[in-house]
Structure formats: structure tokens, C-alpha cells
Length: 188
View 1 (cartoon, rainbow, N blue to C red):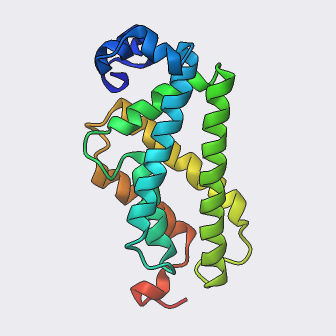
View 2 (cartoon, one colour; view 1 turned 135 degrees about the vertical axis):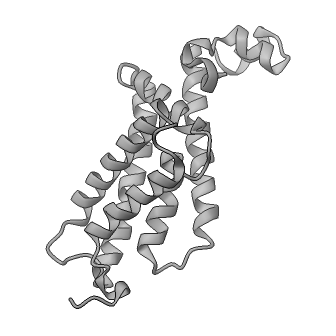
């Protein structure tokens, strides 16, 4: 419902109809639409985290670039063809701008993502793949801002920013950030 019609469509009576339940039953769990939306935002975030964790199990723990590409592929919607999650994320993000409880859900999720990216970039630095003079936290912030921009564009114009193009852009960004000349056989 949110994917096709936006958050405005997610009223308690509408959700009850979609579930085949009564409005009273839904209100047992969520007194207001805001409570329902906070729960939904948390659910979407947890589902994405679970998908990232599952995909990371197949990655080499020392291949920082691949791990970042895998994680950011989920966050940008590049791992799925329709861009559904990107549109849902954008709908929640727009509402979070003026809704304190949703803002906190978004902020907590963003902090966690930035922290994980900073840890990955710090590992890349220890492995000699990220220049020593760069600040992993600052670079994580810039990387997430870039990924967020891709997510917005993918949500609004999915036909112009296909999943393979998003992956390619993320890969190029990380190539510029990390010293990958060793992998290509180029002199340092």
C-alpha cells in the first residue's frame, strides 16, 4: 500500500481492511496512525538489516569493497529490480523531516549505517586500502550521502537509474576512495 500509494494511504481503517481485521483490533496495537508508521518504519529497517546480514555471510570478511557494495546495494535498492524499498524509504524520509518519532527511527538507522561504514573503512585503512590521511568517519558520512542521493534518484526515476547502474556508480565511488591499483596490477 505504501509503495503504490504513499504513507497517506496507510490509515488504520485501510490497514485493517488490507489485513482482513477490524479497525478495533488494529487499534489494540496502534492507537494512532503515527504509532503504526513508526512500527512500519522500524519493520522495514529491520528487514533491510536482516537482508544485509544474510548477504554479508557470503562475502570475504577482508574484502571491504565487496562488503560495502553488498550493504549499499541493499540500501539503495540496487539489489532488487523494482526500486520498491527505495520508494518506501523516501516516503518515510519525507515524513521524518517533520515527525519527531519517525525522525528518531531514521536517525538511529542512519547512525548505525554510518558506524558500520566507518568501521569497514577503518579496516580498509588498516589493510592499506584506504589512504592513511583520510578520516574513516568523515568518508563514511560522504559515502552514505552519495548512496542516499542514488536512492532518491532511483525512487523517483527508476527507469533512468537501473540497479546495475547504481552498483557501477557505487563501485566507482569506492574505487576512487580506496587504493585499488594493486588489484589492477598498476604501479603505486
